Length: 169
Image (cartoon, rainbow, N blue to C red; front, side, top):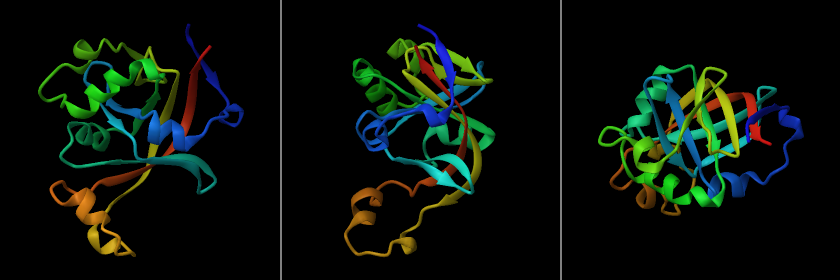
């Protein structure tokens, strides 16, 4: 099977399932030097009359520097049979290992950006805006800072225009 470029308006899926339960790989860099990480937090929607993906990356993640240094990144979505590979990519740093060698994932260049041959869908995203989450921004007292940020730094949010969608056919 190969990737086919699709009109985003032709897609039909549940974003809560796609991101929160199936997860995604966020990837940035070049075909020669890139890194990927698993993410299960994010949003898909419309902002500034553009179709956008919002994702969150902690500054201590290796992928953070690649996203910071790139105009584009990808979000790759997989079937359940790749859960182990995504789990590995979320729990190991590209600083310390070769994630492609360890998982068997194969990079695929789409519109000049790195996705993966095994993905069911790849979104090519162009960064539009970023901001840093911080404790003072929380409007409720329901324990989110203590639960998610007690020992780890706050995330940087990236709002990115989805410039292309590739699906397997």
